[in-house]
Length: 199
Image (cartoon, rainbow, N blue to C red; front, top):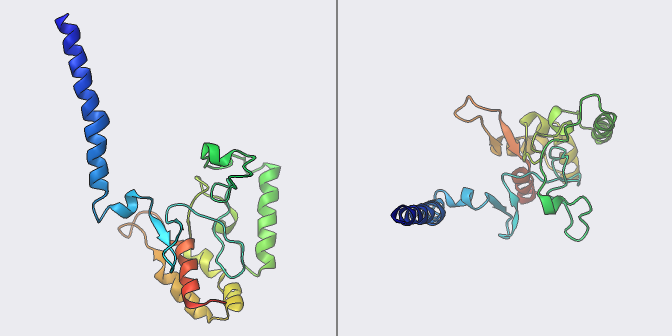
């Protein structure tokens, strides 16, 4: 009987430690001023202070006055809660399509996307044609952003050099100058454009 009581006590103590104290401690640490933004979803606000997205999750931009983001195999950020036939919001699905390079559906989508880009006067780059592994990547390469400058400059009636400067200002450089690739967060870049041009 003593062993059973010891086992129950140990189980209870461990439960309190790992299910109550540890999560509460991590939550408290995460809310420290220098960590709270990341812990709360890296939310991005517009000039009016409204949350318009997250720095961690991409979203589509269809207007010619904005930079296009990477294509997505999921409709995670645009699923309509009232018409979620694919069940995206229920499952929180993200990820690649897993279609082979020879799959006709994938080839058809890529050809369609390349054709749309060419009609807009944009040179097709890998980021503007291929999805990321998560399908939620918020970044494109600086080269993919610069490929869209002429179109946006014409629609917004701003100098291309001004847009290129914005791209450079909103570029996230390689981590420690070595790891990963330079990337431009499309949502941040589009908000920066709105700040300089209302066209």
